[in-house]
Length: 492
Image (tube, rainbow, N blue to C red; front, side):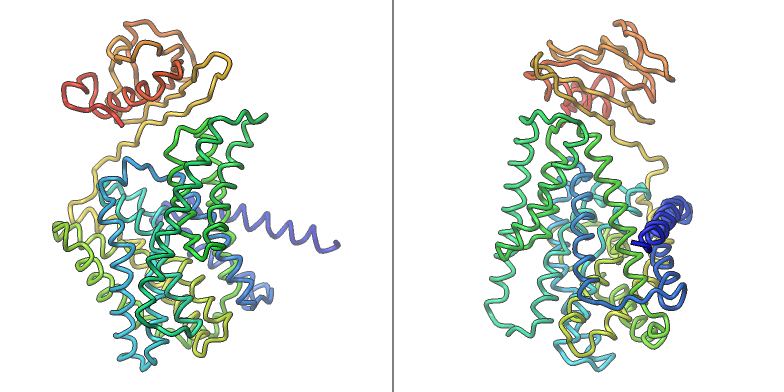
């Protein structure tokens, strides 16, 4: 108990420093994981001197943090944004993983002299892109939505097949013709469990009358965690079930959706901070120097050979322009996930696993510096980045149970086509009306001749019957303006 105030104080300092590091990382265009890893190293054996070398505990805590990160990723991913990229995203997260494992394993078997199982284990660990790194960097680059959607789907889904491959190779299980069937079952069952929990959770949350607003975010996250545990207990992919459950819940008409997404985002940041600091604490700088060359070799193989080949082969059916394929190849960011996956063979005592963990640390640091810092300029050089990014309109809802109605809160983002539209031109369905407009902190009741402006906040009261149609109409005008129907924009 005497050490509790000290430990809580250190935790508070690290958390505050990590929050400040987010702003620094955004300015530098880098994932904040590097700064968090640095904090962990500073607290470890080469800094303050905290000794931590438990790979099994690191693996367990890392997977728990990964569940939280995938939950946040699923909840904050907009289905309309990723739907056009569904095919490329699925192939990048499955076929590309297989190609990357095979190419990386063969190259490292030849270049580093690793036996085939260990070489393929290296390939499996390095095949997964990192959801936290992709979400934190890619959403600020301003790339075309289809590419962002493909990369977000890939980073949310490809942890599952990579994890299965690592577990199989680390356990020493016999690799035969039944392995593909096992992988297909785990992925299919994980998908089904995620869809089931997401659908049931959304239905239950819409019908529940919880006594406090703050309970809705907790219940939503709990559903995603239950999806993971159910998937694992069913010998399916719990990671895939988590992401899919979050994706379904995040795109459902949940009460207090905005509060839920804000809570999930904060929880995701907390998981990232804790995970990266923990991994930095586990790292041994003295050993990292010994694996500098193998790490750089593996990084060069992944970046210049395995990733481009896996992208080209997996996306053959879609015939994407070479500029888009080049960007997708460069945007395969690695982060904490490969390090967490590398802990699995280390905790099971696989020979050569310690060298793998240290090499992955080196590789993650180098690739993050190289890719994270150049991703934005590279996208602009390829002509794929927008000059100015328009954010999607925010629509939140709260149920008015006794009235059989709902209250929609709408924030008009910069660049929205709602700017300059008269209230009379909104064309909301019968049963819906704009009851309040808040502009620069002052509220007023709008008239038919009132014009909307950027940064306005609207309160729209609608009956439950036309609630969905009301939101579709608002989103349609947001994208296409007052002539939305004439231009074929019906909302979604």
